Amino acid sequence: MRRDLNLLADQIFNLLVIGGGITGAAIARDASLRGLSVALIERNDFAHATSAHNSKLIHGGLRYLRNFEFSLVRESLRERRTWLRIAPHLVRPLPFLLPLLDSGLRARAALSAGLTLYDLLSFDRGGLDDPAQFLPRHDWFDARKALACEPCLGSLPLAGAFRYFDAQMYSPERLTLECVLDASQNGATPANHLEALTLLLRKDGVEGAKVRDLESNAEFDVRARLTIVAVGPWADVFLAKALGRPMHTLRRSKGIHLIVPPLTRSHALTMAAERGHFFVLPWRNSALIGTTDTAFEGNPDIVGASEAEIEDFLGLVNKHLPAARIGRRDVRHAYAALRPLVADSGGSTYSASRRAELIDHRSENGVGALLSVIGGKWTTSRALAQQTVDAALRKLRKSAGACTTARRRLPGGAIDRVSDLVTSARAACATFPNADHLARLYGSRLPKLLAILEERPNLSRPLGSSGDLGAQVVLAIREEMALTLEDVVMRRTGIGQEGNPGPEVLDKTAVIMAEELGWSETRMRAEIASVAAIFGGT
Image (cartoon, rainbow, N blue to C red):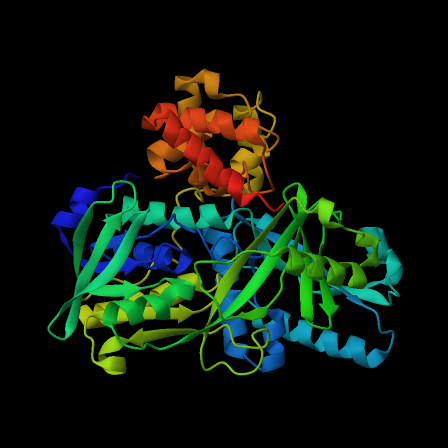
């Protein structure tokens, strides 16, 4: 997969998708598989913002049952099963413990009823070929059994815990990337680091966008018969600027996450708190704690986890899980992102609906050939893309085959059984310290990495403690459209995803990229400084 700016400039596409998060990537994948010509552009990198900076869960939304959003929960549970099927290397079952501190029967009965309904709504969760991807029904652990599973609950007045299952992404960044890869393999033309400056307005409609290549600063037009804006928290800002009038507004909710040393053995924890709940999630070699949920009114381009927010969140976690005893020095990395919420969702951002909305601007404000997508969840992005492409086909007056994205495996997902993948990866990568990590990142695409290792055996040594290899950097550049050091360190590999890898690792990675891309010493040093700044506060 390579950037082809000439093709973007010279062709009139059926669809131009603006935004390379999971929503835009899923739309491009679906549309290209149905035979449409598709351009996908992203001003930063694929999965750069909200699509990466989340709790890394593919989940049904158990708490949405309290809002009686049964259809959203059912859709989420159906889509959870889909991701487990089409990306088994990147999405796996994860057991949760939900501690019960009230020994009264009423509290236990209420939770049991909710989890029973959750199980009933996921009635098709067992229809997968690989038994390792099966999610069992919920069950009840008394206090002794719960403590045997997770001793960190011992500091609580524990009556017991419910165990239930959801799913976890090993890398939401790479899951998004695989959607882009699949789109590209089926004729789409994607490009990252390509900013949409404004929409091309002709008469009463949109004919594409004027864009700027952030690598060269060159500007040109990308033309399309229909344009879809899928830029998440930036949707109303971008559309108001491009169309010169106020647009359908969003509510923005800010969530921060903390990566700390492991706190549990194998289970995730769902912890009730006075401000909703938070998760303690085992993830790779760390614990991922998330998330906060507060209204955000500022510039969506400027989002970070402040020291005050980190300290406040640590206090909340230590209050409700005293055995954690985590301090600021334990935080390996902290990140923040914005959730785009439909503006008419009432109440607090925590209780606001996570439903999505597809807007046809012809009926909304008289602008033709323009759709925009707001809201939604990571888990339901594939279904939202299907709905959007169905609408696009109607707008284009084109017929196409049925959507196949629910059953078609992603490029790395051609795996019958996860256990076979791990076994073969360990055999093929016997000399590497982290074969399981490589298997999870690449799945059935692992031979592409092995081919580079055969070509350049000097790149077989781990760059740092994450276990990522120099050959992965080359693969990211040659086949995964990585253009910057941040692309590689934060989204193509695991080098920086659990915290600061340190200057030596950044230097070694940058040297490989400089050799492959022909960077000057000045460019290389600027790239290193840019990535080091990400970890400046942690």
